[in-house]
Amino acid sequence: MNIFQIISTILLSLFYMMYFINICRMKIKQIHFFSLGKKKEFKKTMIIERILIVSCIITLMIQIYSIIINENTYIMNLPNWIRIGGLIILFLGNMMFLFSLITMKDNLKIGIYEKEEVKLIDYGIYSFSRNPYYLGFYLLYIGFIIVFPNVLNIIFSIISIVFISKEIKQEEGFLFEKLNDTYIDYKNKVNRYITLYKKKNKSL
Image (cartoon, rainbow, N blue to C red; front, side):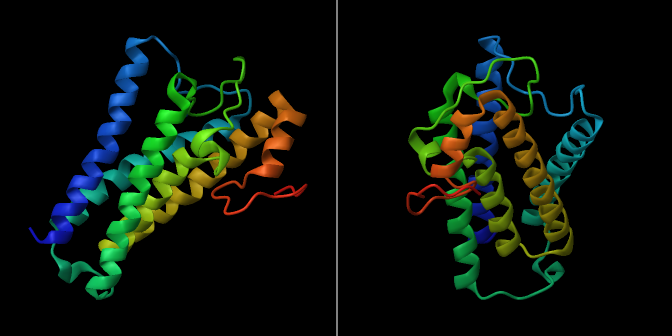
């Protein structure tokens, strides 16, 4: 294995280790936090969530496959300095994901809980991004595309990113319905993905 395969394996393992440790922690505490793909009032929402689950699982399998396969499968020969940039993006994805888990703690909800009360978290990493949890996945996928630019990795990473963006819009619409002016105020201050400066009375 070369240095790109080794570092990518470590970062990918750390990312999903955090993911599954959090799942186990929430289950031990009997906290229901994952509702993706479960029965919803609106069928379109359920369909999008189920496609998202399938695409993310396939993308993970392809990421593992991408680490193993030969470089001759790449559709372009990127210079090492660009691929190093991809590793940095992977690392940033891990950090974004970690900080979102630390900030949310037991308040993390994945998917739409139509009948449950919603609590807005607007501090920590959530004071700079409305969706740092999903942004962590974006950075993971983008980093992998740069480090391992094979056709399958590119296609399924893009599909996963598209359906994550659809899920984000659905969840934000749900938060608006639940929190109304409170969420509008938060939305006016913090961008959907990253806020480099505080906004003034501007809605996305």
